[in-house]
Amino acid sequence: MIAPEITTEGAVLNRVQMARISAVGTAVPKTLMTNEALSKFVDTSDEWIVTRTGIRQRYVAKDGETASDLGAEAAKIALAKAGVSAADVDLIIVATITPDMVLPATACLVQHKIGASKAWGFDLNAACSGFLFALQTGVQYVSNGVHKNVLVIGAEIMSTIIDYTDRTTCIIFGDGAGAVLLQQSTALEGGCFIDFLHEVDGSGGEFLNLPGGGSKHPTSHETVDKRMHYIHQDGKAVFKFATLKMSEICLRLLTRNGLTGKDIDLFVPHQANKRIIDAAAERIGAPPERVLINVDQYGNTTAGTVPIALNTALETGRLKKGDLVLMATMGAGFTAGAALMRWGY
Ligand code: COA
Image (cartoon, rainbow, N blue to C red; front, side, top):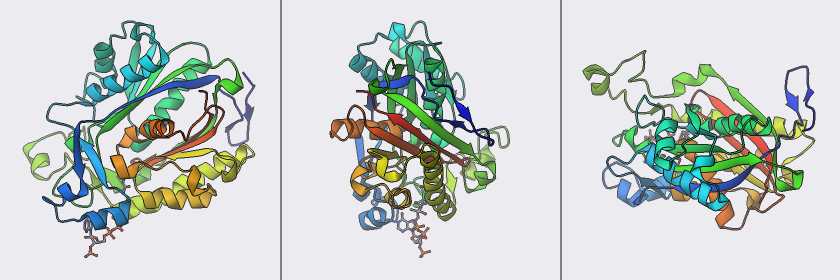
């Protein structure tokens, strides 16, 4: 491992982390909900949704289908692709804001469903930045040699926390999960994580939240009557934060690694809104043909977007061994993250 260089700000520079993604799996529910179908029960239109968000369709879970169901399915696919037995998984980290239950952690349920008999695990909540935060956490356990096989999963059943009478939020979100297997990397050309930059800013909490059911507003008839068990957002404030922050954090990460947007082979941003992605890509200087966009197909699956987007990139031949990949997220909190990696297979 290359020794890290620490700046006066405390940032760790050019620390090549000898962990790589060795497989990706995804799972989405079978039911497809098009904009047309949505517009049958909420006052909206395909034209409005496509123009303002780029979203054309999303998948929604059937009753009883859970985050651990999708997470386990995605994890099994990733393990099968890598040829790794569930019994050899050391750690499972599940990023989610729609856990099956408040407790136990969804990671425990996934562990049981896939038969990862020796694994420990936990959930991580950083909303739409959850997967990237979980990924970086998993990278630490692999690159320091503690673990050989770490599953990082982003899994959401957003349809359970969406108010389908609120046209400003219900059009955006979809259900889905993605899982990656992290393993040690023996050579740089075999893929590695290069650097990351993650942030939280709790002053943004008022603009995007789900206020009911926590210790501040425990579930009661009143919280349900006030629809506090659903996501609430100030769309314009979130949009502004997202467009500015996603590019800003990426530019800082690129600059401190001596890179520009033109050096990136693939930009894999959080899939919230095509206009947010386009604005971020333009500021970063990433050419449009190197920007992965699949929000049109899945909507915003929160912690699921980045691994699902990685899978789309692989399936469409847009990601190959040795590519320099920049991933970026932003979400409720506010949270924001960016990570640079060299793709390994
Ligand atoms: N269908 C039709 N009309 C809608 C609508 C919908 N689904 N949602 C809102 N409108 C209407 C509004 O009522 C408003 O009408 P008015 O001018 O008569 O008052 C008009 O469209 C414009 O609304 P506005 O809120 O200004 O639209 P917008 O361009 O800001 O787009 C969002 C709204 C939610 C799509 C946009 O703000 C956004 O994407 N924000 C970020 C949300 C996000 O990504 N959240 C997750 C972060 S991880």
